[in-house]
Every structure is written in C-alpha cells, then in structure tokens.
Image 1 (cartoon, rainbow, N blue to C red):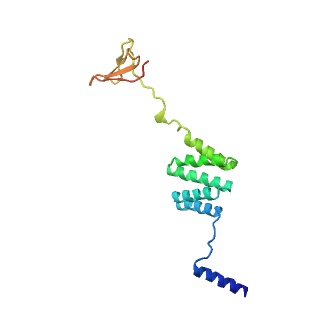
Image 2 (image 1 turned 60 degrees about the vertical axis):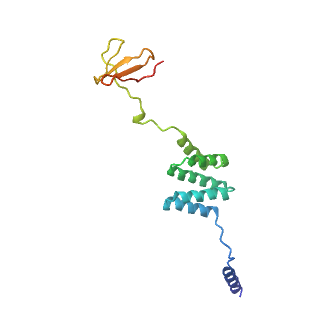
Image 3 (image 1 turned 120 degrees about the vertical axis):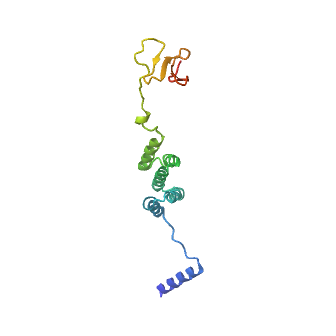
Length: 173
C-alpha cells in the first residue's frame, strides 16, 4: 500500500513537470570535466566545468584547488595565458592545499621563466679580420667585404666592396 502511494506521487510529480532534479555534486562534475578533457579532448568544455566547480564549490578547498590546477593545464594545452591566472588563483585562495599549491607553483614558475638557450640562441664566434697587422682593418675572409674599426664610434664596421655600403657590426662606445 505504501509503495503504491509513493509510486502514484512520483507519477503525479512527473506528469505535472515538477519532479525534483538530482543535484550534481562537485565530485560528479569533476569526473565529467576529466572525461571531457582526457577522453573527449574537449578542453573548452572541460574548462567550463572546472570554472563552475571552482565557483560553485569554493568551500570545498581541495576540490576547488584541484579544479583550478586542471583548468590551468587545459589552458596550457591550448597555449593560453589564462593558465597563469588559474595557477595564481590556487596560490591566492588555497595556499593550504599543499599538493595543488605545489603543482600551481611549479607550473607558474615554468611558464614565467625564460626558455632555455638553444643552439640557435647561443653565442656565435666568427673570424672577421685574419692576418691584419695594421689598425686600419683588412679584407673579410670572403673577399667581398672589408672590415675596419670605425674610430668615430669605436665599433667594427663592414664595408661591402661591391655595393659600397657600410654597416656597424659591433656596438661602439
């Protein structure tokens, strides 16, 4: 009898369109965001869910901090500067969430440090004057240019013997 009454009430609520919706927990949303991010590859949808979690479940510090870290990682994969904002939020709002704060600190440091030097950005040394025993300069090894000291600026200057153009190659005083 009791079961029948509950069933009738449920049918009535559904018929009237007032059936209560099941509330999603922050952890449910976090799992959905992970699926969007990792399985579907839909980073924008994942970011939207992580933002919602960080906003709506801010009192759950651990969950909110993890959401912001994941959001930052999504932004990084998209090449967006917003990643830094997400990591800063973790450090400002949830500094006591040790694991998330450490991840945010590491990622923020990696994003704000200059890139390491590569072979293209290393110092290059090239021979400009060979066998010149005077202070006026001499021919460049390619035979087309003449290297000399520009006494007005104190720097080295290369003069193209074909075109007659000169260009400063080292700074002067």
